[in-house]
Amino acid sequence: MADTTLQDKIDGFLDSAMKKFVIRDYERAIQDLKAAEMLDKENPEILYNIGVSYCRMGLDRSAIEYFNKVLKLKQSFIDSVMVKKLLAYALIRLKNYPESLDILQQVLQMLPSDTAALNMKGYCLEAQGRFDDALQVYASIIEHERDNYNAYNSIAYIVSKAGGDPAKALKYARIAYDANNNNPAYIDTMGYVYLKMGKDDLARQYFTRALEKAPLSEEIKKHIIECEKKYSS
Image 1 (cartoon, rainbow, N blue to C red):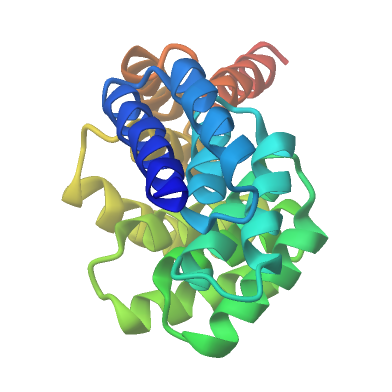
Image 2 (tube, rainbow, N blue to C red):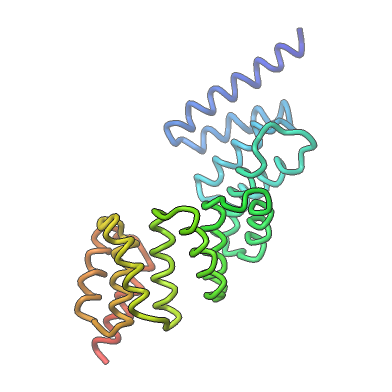
């Protein structure tokens, strides 16, 4: 009878937490989940959802702590691949690219064509300045998914950033942009490609539109500053 009562309490906290999670009240969801954790410290569902809640709140170090707790459990019904991808994502946000790459490699050994893991791997490599390796990863994504426009966009940006073939960069940027010309990242890349081609007026037009779509984007603001410096020099 005592075990049943304990499980009922845990289920009650979990149910309450999930209702708060749905409405994005992650702080109060964590309060319920922490109460459940006090009753069962090795419950994978509790630990996983605490990690996800922290991740949604941008508290990546805490999220990492809980994702690692899930992965260290001897038995868990939570998909370890899913946990590792979330762990890699949190590490990326902390700019810990080497450790994220290690985790992603574990995922890709099990699922070589997992495009989410490949996209994160490409991002990590690009962030480390390993442009050739990143381009290979994004090219492999397109081989698996011909309509993965994020990969086209990434290739276009990296080729331009690395001083590569402008015609190739524009071709790939255009593929992504034509697929979704309201995506601020794709608009920004079009601007960046034109900036590197010396077409500053066109670049400015795309950057302005991109910023209208994503006014808080530091990346777009940085590109606008780069464009203005070039224009005024």
